[in-house]
Amino acid sequence: LSITAVRVEGAQVLATSSVQTSVESELAGSYLFFFPKRLSLIVPTGTIEKKTATAYPQIATIKVRKEGANTLVVAITERGPAALWCDKSAACYDMDASGYIFMKNDHASSTMRIYEGSVLSEALAKDGPVGTLFLNGVFPSLEGFIASAENATKRKITKVTIGEGSDVFATFAEGGELRFVMTTNTAPTLQNISSVFASTAFQNGKELEYAD
Image (tube, rainbow, N blue to C red):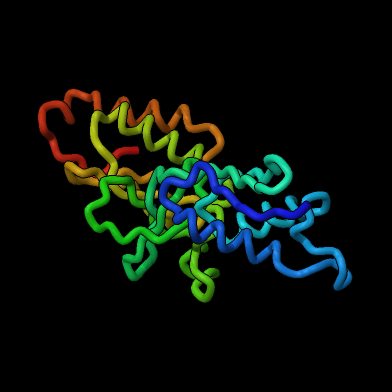
């Protein structure tokens, strides 16, 4: 009994036909020039999962299973964009909530927050950032801090630039910039930010050049 049909489930942005073609290519050929890879009993589900996920960074999860004797079902979930990462040439890419960069974003009107900088812009200049994890997994905590800073200041942060070391520069839509150093304990920093923006001087419209 052989696999004669491939069905893709869960695709939203990805083209189903493209994923099907990729899976079909993994079913071509034989083992030891004798056992067809399409043979239902030995179909390489694990290899198909790994190679398909690698070929399509948009895929968050993938599970390949047999349905009946002749159908292979490829069930996927796609990554959702949580923010943008942009390089020095203003080319932007979608990042998911973990900071995984998974596809180029050509929509200039996107309202998602923009992140810039870090080693990506230099170390990955040849291969591009797709398929890499921004800030090596620190992004979720940084994004959480930025959201908390927005709540504390009652202002929207549209762009976050990662500078040298742990320096971070957050740009407000209303104008002005928030500068801080990434630390594991962010509570004191948030408390200082809240105090400054709640101060009488700030509430009375005084322009602050610097606050520590």
